[in-house]
Image 1 (cartoon, rainbow, N blue to C red):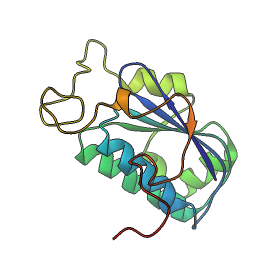
Image 2 (cartoon, rainbow, N blue to C red):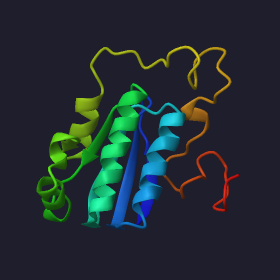
Image 3 (spheres, rainbow, N blue to C red):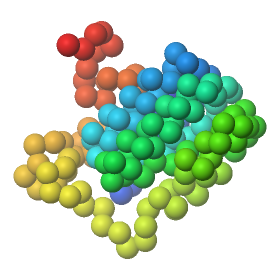
Image 4 (tube, rainbow, N blue to C red):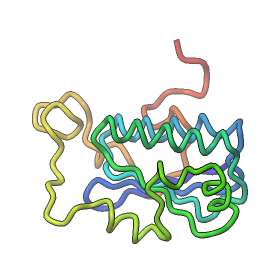
Length: 159
């Protein structure tokens, strides 16, 4: 699995996922979403248009990430436009638990309410007086990353 982050205007982040998302890669995908939620990106769009294989463990990770996003008050959209991704999602009934869109543009349009405020609530990243960095100061366009590197952590064990 390869991942590229592409920051969008207005606080959105597109996570372009390529290759195979199997049982071993699924936890890393979920960690990307959690880290982006911690940085207050909203919406988060998981672009799976170049994924060749989607394991049931990856689908579970997508559903868990969607729940994490909802709890954080954020929106997570999954972009899927081909059978390698759509068939397993449908077979496992995951399309009812996920916000699935046919393109990144459709996901961004559906996830950002028109006229909505882009300013984060007090105490969140980027809010006045917040100790958390604003997403615009922490992400770069586009940048390949590994889980843990959004906050500067190494790939080693965390204690």
